[in-house]
Length: 121
Image (cartoon, helix red, strand yellow):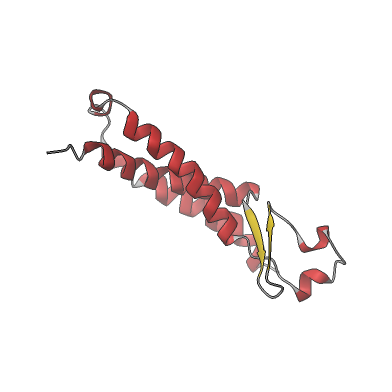
């Protein structure tokens, strides 16, 4: 019978790290890629429409960053979860998991704060 402790540690670390990495990606505008759905174009990195064309292009082709932010956060969380799964079980016995709900709530509050300027336009 295999131990389910390593996948459990991975899941807890992945979920917690994803919330933190997503808030960081939104706050710093770190998208792994940018999607322009009306053009059917995907570009690497965070690309503003005014970076490669006329400023009016931003009105015609809005950029979508959510997919890039999610991919960035997933990569960061995958690294954190993999490290947590490889850590010996004896090291994690002292960590109390009851406080982990604070991290996603704080990250969600940060994301709301970062996106407030979009709603003020």
